[in-house]
Length: 600
Ligand SMILES: [Zn+2]
Image (cartoon, rainbow, N blue to C red; front, side, top):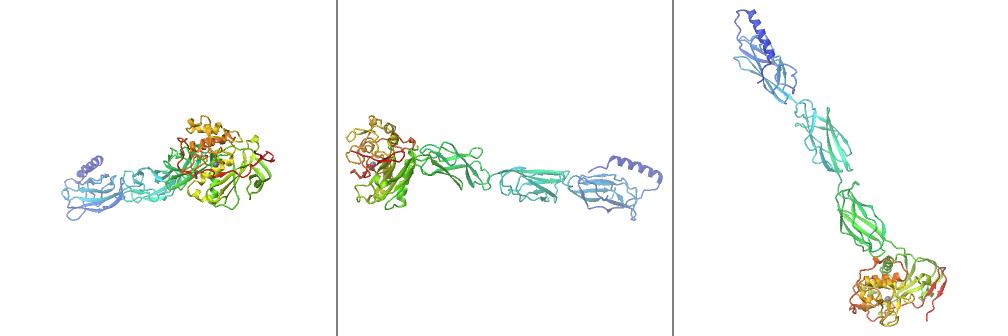
């Protein structure tokens, strides 16, 4: 219980003494009842004085209000205070004084006591005051994904000056950064404001929702992170050109973005070569900025489109590169016509060889150049054009039925001696009776590449370029340093010390024009066809170098010189399956003057 203030008590005692002197010997009237007159059941605000002071009356047994009766007024609930409380009753309604409610919302009570009578109780209800503070219930700083509703919704609590929660209060909301949210929220009975329906903006960064009530503010800060990976882009290194079989010169850096274009951090891309036959590491992980650097991508060994596909989640990205070469092989089809699949084999062979020969050779201007006359095959055109660097006419025709001659191929328009006789125009004609069988056993592509190498001079220019020793004998040997170096590099030091062994089987068209089958077996430029793949080795690349082509040694196929011994899986096995074009060809000067080649 709270005592009545001491100052009021002192004043009341003084008044009582004076009254006693005035009334003399009059006997005090005995109080018979005490009753509420007015002011109970009021609702007020915590810490504030009630609008109306409650009143009571003390009566005698005749029902008359009597004054001067000692009364005690005590706060009995709610911890309020009463100022100016009377000590004695008045001769009518008596005010309890100024009742200030307690600071906690809820029930307040005053008790008025007169000796010998049951006390009377005044009730009042204290409600919370105006909201003057707002505090976070859920964390004021949190993370969320762009474009999504904040979940769970953040919660703040309103309170008055005494810390009582304030319900049914309106709070203003203001967003900065982005996104959308209501501009007004209302507190519930517990004083809680739930920020439902707050959707974050679409750009990574911060969205801040600031709540204001009165002079109080509170900010909730959402740190936005990107959404799921939706797309990728090449940040740097796309569309590079590099040498076949070599790593690209500059790194390739990939970025991952969500559907709003934000960089998605922490992703790992899986990588696979999907075109061109190169090699690339299997996965790559982003750095702190989200950039993914593709591990070294070694291009394939052919000048076909090179593509690596990167995959992150549902997103894929194709990164393209090209094989750098300045040597251009122009394949033109003539005669009865080929299927598209057959044509592609010739195009592939040209792409393979232009990945190996990378340097330009001098252009040749042709004027009324009769290809039929130069090459000895009918159905070929007359050319008026500048050739850069070689034109090869290809066809599939009936030659001599199944077996026997499979192809006739070779150069027929040569550059001048000063240009190393390098081929300007050549032909490749395949026997229609044999080609399906070779396609079926998987050797046709390699055979076409083999014949195209003859057109460029491998085997066909060796004699003219004086690269052979003991030609026409069983000890025929290739002396070019490039070919021999390729043999050494392929583990053939023991067989190539005195030069590269050349085919010595005595069969025209095979002997003196191929690497020796007994030594090199499956190598592409031996004189026999082997099942199971025919590598284009560093020996053959070296021979192209010897003839004056600028070559890229990295484009050679992996090859190791086999242990000497006959190949068990070669076809057709009887040799003599290919021949040169039926003419000796022509020399073409830099200005286009054509001179027939005379051979003994
Ligand atoms: Zn051949």
